Amino acid sequence: MRCLILIVGCLLFLGLRPAPPLRAYHISGFAQGTTYHITYYAADSMIKQDEIDRVLTHIDSSLSIYQPYSLISRFNQSEGGIVIDTLLRSVVSKSIEVYQKTSGAFDITVLPLVNAWGVGIKKLNSQPDSATIKAILPCVGTSLIALSDSRLIKKKPCVRIDVNGIAQGYSVDVLSSYLDGRKVSNYLVEIGGELRVKGNNPLTGKSMRIGIEAPQQSEFTDGSFQRIMHLSRGAVTTSGSYRKFYQSGGKTISHLINPKTGYTADNDLISVTVYAQNAITADAYDNALMLMGLTKAKAFAEASHEIEAFFIYRKPDGTVADTATTGFYRLLEQPKT
Image 1 (cartoon, rainbow, N blue to C red):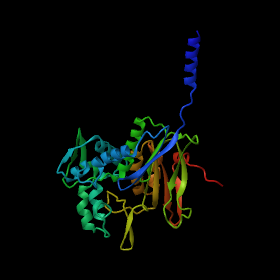
Image 2 (cartoon, rainbow, N blue to C red):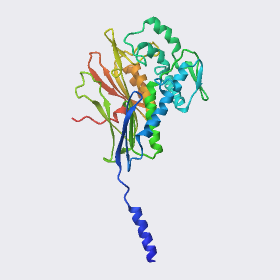
Image 3 (cartoon, rainbow, N blue to C red):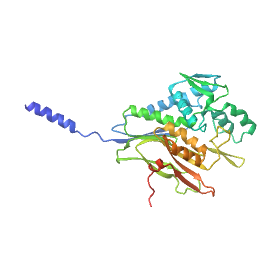
Image 4 (cartoon, rainbow, N blue to C red):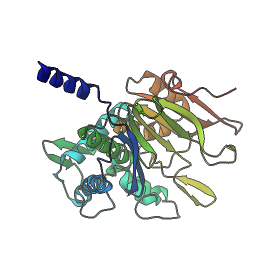
C-alpha cells in the first residue's frame, strides 16, 4: 500500500510539474536580395539559422531569376517550357488565379517589360520608347503560359516570367510551414517587410503588434510607422511606389508596371498594405491593388473574401491621407488621443 501511495504521489508530482518557461529566439540573415527575421517562442533554441538558410537556398533554386541555374531561369531560356517542382508550380498556380481575379492586373509574364524599364536584373536610367513597348506587349500575358501535370508550358518562345511580386510572400509561407512542422506555436516570420504571424507573444500574453510602414517622405515626420495592427494569425504585405524607383528625365520611374499598357504605374496610391490568411495571397494582391488606383482597389478589396487592405494615397490637392477596408480597421490599434 505504501508503495502504491508513493507511485501515485510521484505521478501527481510529475503531472503538476510546470512546463519550462518559453523564451523568445531570434534568427536573422540575408536572402532574396533583402533581409529576413524570425522570432519564435520555445523552451529552447530548437531551430538554427543554418536550417532556415537551407530552406531559403532551396527556394532560390526554383524561383530566383537572379540564379542562372534556377528552374525559373531555365523556363525563361526554354522554347516551350520545362518540368517544374512543387515550389514553382504553387507560385504559378496562385499567379494564374490572381491574374484571372484581377482581370490581368497581376501578371508574372512582365519580365520583358521589367527589363526594358530597367527595374529588373539590369538597372537602367533610361525609358523605353513606345516602339519598344509595342514590340514587347505580344509576349506579355499570363494566358500565354499553362500548367500541365508537372510541366509549365509557354505558348510563345518570347514569354518570360518574373515571380518577384509573389515569391517573398510564398517564401514566408514556406518558412511558416517549416516552423509548424517543428511544433512551434507562436512565431513571426518576415522577409523584406512581408510577414506572417501565428499565436501570441507568450511573454506578454498579447497578440503580435505589427507596424505599417510609412513612406519616407516629408509629409511623415514621425519616421517609422503609420499605424499599428494586432494579429494572432495571418499575413501582412506591403507594396509601395516609394519603395523601388529611379529618376529619369526629371521623372520618378516606379518598379510597378502595368502589364496591359506596358508603362509604369501612375495613380493616386502611394502604398497598399494587404492582410490575408497566408502571405502568398497578400503579396500577390498588394501589387495588383497598387495598379488599380484607390477607387477601384478599395472596391475590389471590400468585395473580396480573401483580403483586407489599407491604403495610403495622395489627394488631388497634394496632401497625403489613408483609408482602409472595413475589415482592416478592425485589426488596427486605435490612435491615442
